[in-house]
Image (cartoon, rainbow, N blue to C red; front, side, top):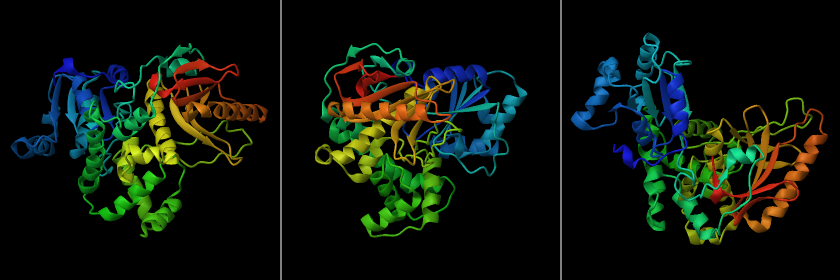
Length: 425
């Protein structure tokens, strides 16, 4: 690759840090999110197991003699290592024999079965997750506001400019796929649809060689799209398929398919957050369901800008997914983790970011500026309630992430307001 043309990614800093500490680094994530391009930028030699040259001779060589494909100037990139799972052990063994840091970069767009992998690689091979581009990485956020600064309570007010609803809809439908950046609206929607076809028709089989019912896979994916940004249970997904598609899938099949989607990094769910182990509040433990990119839900629902303009309820959930994708990318860059909060007293927080040290910040996500007051009031009430609970630790920062706001500022009640198109890590 021509490294001069490389478009920087937020994960670059993490890659550099990990290569200084570990003998090898595995960069995982969905297909087409930029793993190979980014890994190549950080490597000095490389081998591609998916290269069809010579009848896929690189893959054959790796299967016959794994140690040969490990040769090269370090960091040495091995792209799509999961095509030959024994390579994991070969890399781990090489790192054991040589204490040098940053010897290998592995990329993987699926997690293979543990069959044939004898060692976890703990302490030798670090793992980090790469995702599609955030709005800041794609150039659609000005980056005037740092999420790390917000979580530290250090944000300065700034005018961020007018935001148009159709632009937000375009970002959702296009997604964060590097190959789609800069494409016009109609063409940008084609890539997510092709992505799903590739996953369903090829990758689902290749992950373990088991032939599955692709019609049922599509039914379940459509149900997940209808339940994007919700805590729908497996049983609810089953009922949704029966009611909306007049078909049936048993719960065990749903669980098996969801595991496949997770191993292909197709889904990227948001785990639940507990305020404090000693708190008297019972917290629901359901994950909030997300695809790795909201554009996939759009493709499965076959939505257009016009249909979303006429269905603001669906747009609300998809916008939430867009924001939570970006919040996760930004938070992980400084050691934060993304959660959601939901308890049995019907209190919810769209997004919770736990920062290093254990403090946490609460975020509500709203599409329109006219919803900011209600969102701020809800956050303040939850904070007050938690402060009254034995063992409860209230959020350090309250913030409303907004779609159509022209400024980032701190309200008189202490709640921050930040447009998603002004945010960065």
